[in-house]
Length: 229
Image (tube, rainbow, N blue to C red; front, side, top):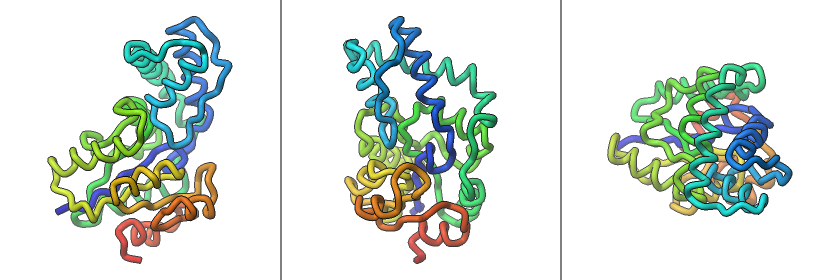
């Protein structure tokens, strides 16, 4: 049975702050002709939930068809601009080293639970060469549901079918209380990283099993993720 580590992306592995808002502005203008004037809440939320809030706040009906069109435009914008990601963002300290170190651990499988659409997740991680140790085929992505726990459930289901995963060896890593809650909802281990907008105290209060200041100490981070300390 494998150990499954499920990573968030934004402000956990990379910082591309502001790009999503700009991309949403372009996508909304394309599908509706409207300018983005009401900023949705992004942190820890899924693309589907963000899209629903965005459409409703601009007096548009959040139908599945309109959400799908908005997502298609987001992917189109990301495809055009992905070459600029490395200039406008950065990998967070230690991210590459931790991903590589975990890839060298026997019995460890790594994937994603992210609010991003799968295509955008690929663009963001590839821009910083962080994708090679992650199995995208078993991830939980933001087009699936408004609710982040659903993404965790899907990732674990896919990973179990492909690799065989012990439920007690599932670890969810993220930078917000939403990430922590999604893990705890299913009884999985939650490790929070205070590299986003939530500080250590807030993440501890959310119920995380462990809170890291960042990912810079590779050996320590790996030990925490694998429950060795």
